[in-house]
Image (cartoon, rainbow, N blue to C red):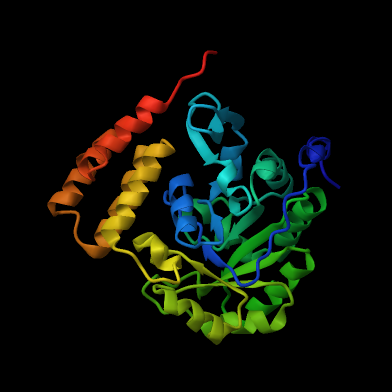
Length: 343
C-alpha cells in the first residue's frame, strides 16, 4: 500500500510517547511565525497544557537534518544547505508540544512525521489554513473538500506511528457537512479533533460560530478542542459551556497576552513582553520571528508608528531588542555562560 521509502522508515518511531490526554486542556493554537520555542514555553509558563508549533510544510522538514544544539540545549531541525533552523524544541516541552504539519500527500506526511515524532508529544495535520500558500499546494483548508485524501493521510500516520495523531479543521458550508467530515475523521483513529468555529471565507472579525462546534462535539466520542474568540480567561468556561468541548484552543488572545492561560488573571502586557524577550535570548530565537511577534503585540495595544514600534522595526538582532526592553544585562549573562563545544 505504501512506497518502499515509507515502509523502510517505519521503525524510526519506536519509543512510545507518554499518553497525551486531550480532555480538559488549555491549548496554544498554531500561529505562523509566532509559535516558535520561546513563545510556546511562555504560554506553558502561564498555564497552557498543550502547545502547538507553527505550521511547517512537509517539503520543508524533509530538507532538514536533526541536530542536538549543545550550546543552548535544544533539538534543532536544520535545513540542509542554508543551515536555517526550521523547527526547534527542547526536553522541557517534549510531553506537550505538537508538531503541526501542512501536507497534501500521505506518504510524504509519514516520512516527514518520522523525522520529528520522537521529539514531540503529537503530530497534527493542518486542515484549516485558508492562506493562499497553503491552499494552492492542496494543503490546509483545501483538504476539507477531499475526504478520501484526509482518510489516506490520517490512517497512514495512525498505522505507522506510535505518536498520537490529530488534525485541525474549519467549519464547512453547512453544519451537516462539518459533522459528517468530523465523523469520518474520527473513524481514522485520531486522538482528538480541533475545530475552528469559522468557515474558510470568514475573516477574524466575523464571530466564531460556537453553536456549530457544539454540533461536532455532540456527534463524536473523541475529545474536541474548540477554537475561536477566546480573548479572556473567562471565555474558556463560556466556550466550553456553549459547545460542550473537552478543551479550548487560544490563538490571538494568547498572542496579545500569553498570560490569558493563567487562572489567576492576566499579568501586564509589558511584563509578558519582557518574559518573551528573555526566552528569545535564552533560546536564540530567529530575529524575524521575534520581531513579527512583538509587532503583533504592539499593534493590538498601541501603534507601530510610536517610538517602541519604530525601534522594534529598526532592530537588527536579539541584542538590539534586549537593549530596547531593558534586558541587556541578561543578554550579556546568557552569552557569557555559553561555552562553544570543540568539534
